[in-house]
Amino acid sequence: MDTVSEFFEASVLKAGDAPSVIFGDTTVGYAELNTRANRLARRLIAAGVGPDSLVAVAVPRSDTLITAVLAVLKAGGAYLPLDPTYPGERLTHMVTDARAMLSIRTSGVATLDLGVPEMVLDDPAVVAECAGERGDNVTAAERRAPLTADNLMYVIYTSGSTGVPKGVALTHAGVADLVSTQTRVYGIRSGERVLQWASFSFDAWFWDFTMALMHGATLVMAEQDDLMPGEALRDTMVKYEVDHATLPPVALSITDSAGLLSGGTLTSTGDVCTRALATQWSQGRRLFNGYGPTEVTVGTSIGGPVEGVQETVSIGSPWDGSAVYVLDEHLRDLRDGDEGELYLAGSGMARGYLHRPGLTAARFVANPYGPPGSRMYRSGDRGRRAADGQLYFTGRVDDQVKVRGFRVELGEVETRLESHPAVELAVAVLGGADASSQHIVAYVTASGQQPMVATQVREHARAALPEHMVPSAVVVLDRMPTLPNGKIDRKALAERAATAPAEQRPAPSPAAGTPDGEPAVDGSGSAPSLEDRLCGLVAETLEITEVTPQDNFFELGGHSVLAAKLASRMRKELGVTVPMRSVFEAESLADLAELMAQSR
Image 1 (cartoon, helix red, strand yellow):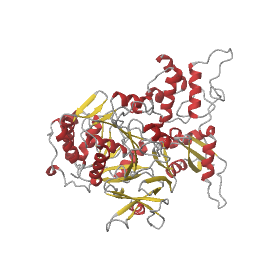
Image 2: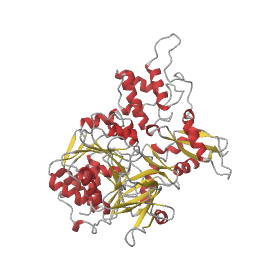
Image 3: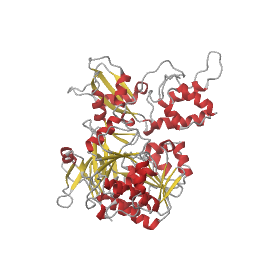
Image 4: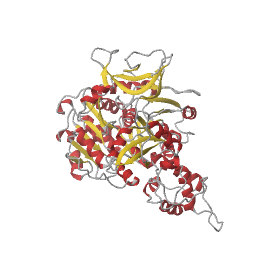
């Protein structure tokens, strides 16, 4: 077997009517899912989809999303994931840059002017057309051209250091070794439940997808609100009795581990798994630590099971069919434990960056340690190999950072900020004391073309960047600090962001809480109102001193993970539980306090 559709169809033969996907109260069996995907695949072939055709998919979390992806792959095409919550400008760029030939969505997703034909999956006419198609497996003769492992499977866009996001083109070639590694490491059994946590826009989504559907297991899906780190995520995992989950350290850091995944497996990935997290989450379950950038098929090495307290958690050893080299600047192999740059090779390596031959040539280079003509990917990650062969990640060689598990090129943030006419120079740095509080702080100087309003510059960034790349605050400076050679002193700005938390978020109006974060009593000495207590919690959560009922949590610099922390504290300290959606939709803290009062 070489392609995703072949692996899935083999699972269908073994699993039959066993549950393939659970979404909320909906359960879809393997046979039914396969039939749905085959019918849609035939409609896609009729619409012109074939090997190496790119289809943009804008479908929310649901069993329909799984059907859509399988149908694209069965037709021989490749999917381009579009997160409907991303700014329209970014989505349009991705579809245009990738040269997608078709987009598919559901009616609940807003229409975007993507410049390509579209298919609305729940349109009655499309539903009727699919119902009229055969439900048996699509054959090679039906496809527009032969489908092989070398054909495109998906294109994922990542942050670009030049200011423009770039598409990473992955083929089916790495799927067989991915499935082999999952089988060897996890021993997944039919009937076990795999949590689908990652966003569709990231390659970790494909890991969850294959970990269930290529092994006859059940993929557990839920609404985004039910997957927010903390109480919501914990409740979802308990409710659906999840056996396997892959989560980033930021989600693990604010989720109670007690009683979760008992006897099952957890994989930490996307960022550094700290000693504290490893100690907590290795008890009562098998804990693994995965590593690999988007430029390989989801990952390239895995460590574990982690046992006991470890000073540093390793990223393990290469996957089946993969190789990881630790090389110096002259591409010499460092086998003595010295730090070097990690170069990745093997079956899962991407074709390169879509329509970017120059960038591809710079990052995908000749492999002097592999077969003639083979390549390796220059990851930009630093690491070392211990005497026992275990690999350790030690940092980056450039300005790329991880923000709450998301890969971010700070250069892309700076380019967007500098496109505002009021900004002359922009420098973005990472702030936050731990994984859950990580955020971007932007320092800017004025161009003089128009008055500088920091909030307007931040909104300018929000119009084009996904939420995790939008600076929590824009700080206006008279001039940038410089080094003796005249270059901007980025280290000084990073230190400033780390040591001046109050500066990192917009300064609202007068404080509602006391300097120590406790809500103040009013002049009569009466107990603080629910509104005042909420403002106090927000001040503590965001590490700021001034919060008023008229402020908006996200305009103060909040983000999704901090919102989850706030909701958890509201429940524990104020005795009030409100849906996560209410935290996101409340226009002000006063509105949120009113909802809290109604929930009591």
